[in-house]
Each structure stands twice: as C-alpha cells, then as structure tokens.
Image 1 (cartoon, rainbow, N blue to C red):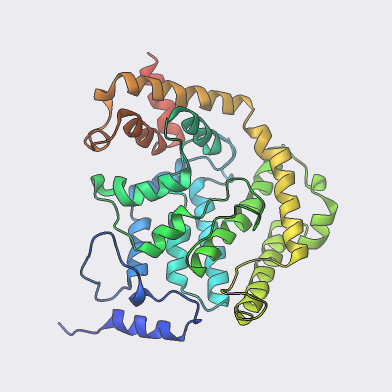
Image 2: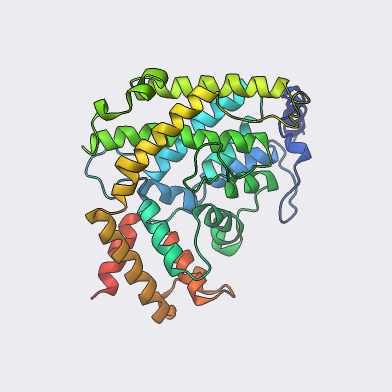
Length: 347
C-alpha cells in the first residue's frame, strides 16, 4: 500500500492559514495518546467522532425552546447545532482560520444538553447538589460518557471550545463573557448566538407567541426584516470587525484578535436578545409544557435516587455518587424517552 502522506499534506496546507489560526499539528494533544491518522488531521478526526456519537444522534429529539411542538419545522437541538456549524464555518473560512477545528467545536457544543431544553437544565441544576451546566456536561459526555465510558478522547482545543461556549444569559461580549483559548472557539461561540437569535424568532412566530411586527423597529431597520437578511448582516459584520481586529493586534494595546461586532450591530443584537428573553424565553419557562417537563425531571430524579439498581449499566459502573449517575442518565435522555420513562416509573 502506497503511503500517500495525506494527513501531512493537509497539515502543511494549514501553514497558509491566518497566523492566529490553530494548526492541527501543533495541537496540545489528547487526554490519551493515539497513533495519528494517515489521511485526517486531529481536528478532522474529532469532528467525525462527534458526528458518529450517540449523544449527537440524540440531539434530533431534544428541545431547543418549544417543548414537543406539533409542527415539523420547529428547530431541535440537532438542527440548531447544524446551523451553528454552517455559520461558524462561513465565518472561519472568511477569516482564513482552521475550519475543521471550528466545525468540531460547533458540532460538539451542545452534546450535554438536557431533555426539554433550558427547563431541563434549570431543574437538574436545582436538584443535583454540585449544580448543572450544559456546557460542562457536554465536556463530560466527550471525556467520560460516550463509548461506554471510554469517551471520545478529543483534542484539547476542541474540548476547550466546547466547555467555554456557554453565555449564561449575559449580553454578547458583556462582562462575564467566558474566554475561549482559540480564535476558532470564539467563532463557534459567536455563531451560536447568531443562530439562536434568528431561528428562535422564526419558531416563536410559528408558535404564535409573537408576531413579526412586534420585533423592535430599530433592530429590524438595522439587521433586516427576515432571518436571511439578519444572518447575512450579522455574519458580514462579524467578519469585517474581526478582520480589522486581526490587523490591529499590537496597536491600541490589543494583544490578540477578537471575534466581535461593530458597536451598532452589537447593540441591536443585544436588544434583540433582550426582546426574546422578555417575550419568548422567560414565558416559555413558566408555561404549562414547562411545568410538565419539570415534574417529569423531578419524578425521574427522585425515582432513580431510590432505585439506583434500575440505572443502565453504563451509568452505574463508574465510581461516582448516585446523584452524579442519575444526573448523567437524565441529561442524556431525549424528550420522548424521558416522557416514556416517567410514565413507566409512575405506574
């Protein structure tokens, strides 16, 4: 068999990327050493491992915002992830960054999300003594829970991007905006925001929660009056702002490039987020479906604490507390599976 040195050629081609881009051959490595692939870089392997994981497949039946919607076109956690990946890749390519790393982070960022969206996350955070954050659970999934406890053994750069993607409700680029070590991680984090502020508007209109003419007039005027226009405006602004930042390192005390937005676009986008929290997100946490979801999570948590022998073997074998095992099990459930399991344990 001829050794084509394909991986090495790809790694050499990365020398033409931006000087701020992560280079796969310079990765900080994996938790456990592995023989390199002959045809894929380490970041490409990470992307593929995420796509083929069980946790990734389960995203198709996990809530984004609206719980158990009747329509076929509502966003799920999987379609959200794919939209984030597409937007992140577009920005990364425009900035001449490492598209493979950006894509891997984007595809893996929500693997630890609970059933029933942020309602499920909120309840598990209340129940589990150590607290629960979906970004930390995503890292736990790729490090410990996938492949029957072996984990996916991803590179440090992908793991860093996954655990630091969360924004915790704060304003974009505001105080408390978690630092991501790679510029590709910054891109994925910003793309996550671009994706959800747009598709959540479409879902809220589809659900009759808001009307299109209710969107703030100043935001519509600046960003656009439909999803396509808004995404284009945001992506182009992020690229232009970030290119300027990348050429300004060393000036004005800027030590490294920042993936960001111009002041006007940033203000408009934060205003749009505040509108969504006020009209969509906060009300969704208090609705009838959310109340049902809370009862389901609480029932499951209480039941498995009392009946730990009922936990699947892959969750029970680890030397963790019962609370940790139960939390891992529930967090991995899809909406439908959690509902079915609640019916079974309630009999």
